[in-house]
Image (cartoon, rainbow over all chains, first blue to last red; front, side, top):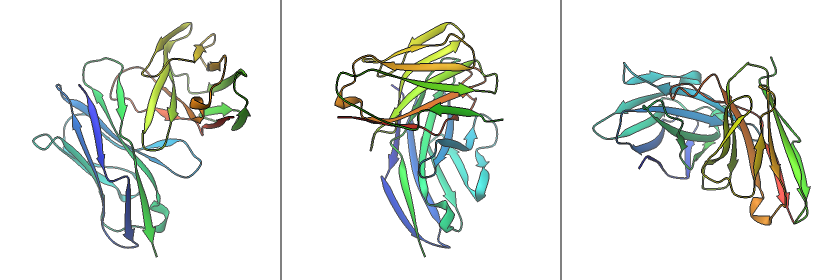
Length: 114
Length: 114
């Protein structure tokens, strides 16, 4: 069965430090992978996505993620955290079957300390 | 473009009351979705629609009904609200059901059932 696991419901970093948010998935077929960001009292917006091709994907606001098939992972990183990055981040996976199923992870709330 | 809008933003109901949440999108998207977001559980799909006049059940459909009479609108109804339906509800839309398409989210409706 398809599933998404985000390790750590809360992550705290200092401003300027590396951001690493972990996402692992399980899927019996090649997945499409997404990261969404949710700022307080707002809806989700797409940060980046992997469909096919290059496994290192760059998104908005300096974030990037790498699809590692052998590790079934799609971790999100940013070299230097900014206060404005404080938000909740959701990893999501869709099956490459032409079907209609996107599964969201439980979310990781990122805190950025001054 | 306004994107995806939701009405109302907040609502408090008593157990047994009914209400309808309205979602509207101006992007001419075929697909629309209703999710609920609960702490630690990510987003769970309630119902979705692949086009005007069609609806289908998602992961947690019980206690909810939907209608898609017009392409741009997707209504979510609660016939007899229960405290377990206290949640934040998000509407989303996408150009099609192709799995690599991102979903565009509304700002959410915060519903409390007493």
